[in-house]
Image (tube, rainbow, N blue to C red; front, side):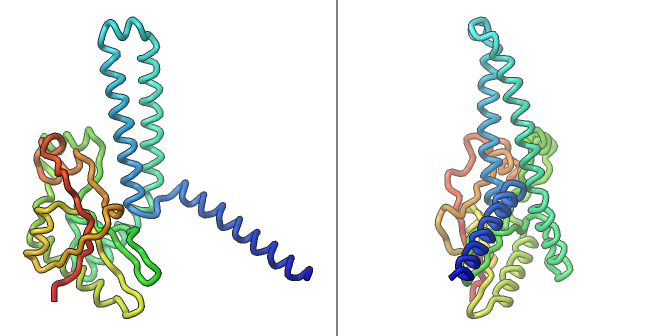
Length: 246
């Protein structure tokens, strides 16, 4: 009886240790691109709030009634910069893993120049997912600079990129087994779905919770049109699994 109690106590200790390690890991690393982008979206909203407060400081009646507003804006900007640094630090290993995957694909004849591979969240006991991304996240200032210089446009998807994507999807199907499979999924617009289907890549829509919307200005750079960040930003993005048409 004492031996059983001892084993039970040891199991509780192991579970508690694993819980602490998982908590520390989640606090210092992103496990998926989806989680990283979610943090970036919240940070973008916080920046929007800072900009609104900053605009209030230049209105004389408001500035006179609230003399401490400038200090609040400065403190908010400092917290924004700290949060941005923390998110970038947490995403370092995620981006390193993506870079390593891209190098491995290049050695196998699949050149990845305009799309990226990250760990996905569309997992199951018999399934491992990889998220394919056609957008690059950048700071607002960098995005504006690229729009002015007409650089880094990646959409519509080029024929060579579609051909390489099809090779990759077919490769995932080849390494899958009957009892365990690898799937690639992505977030796309209706126009992108048409391009994928034309190339012979089958798309199957999955629940919206797996969707990773790009930032407005990231999307604008991808399509090379600054209005895409404002009134021309797509209303609908869909999460889809990619597979090769038989």
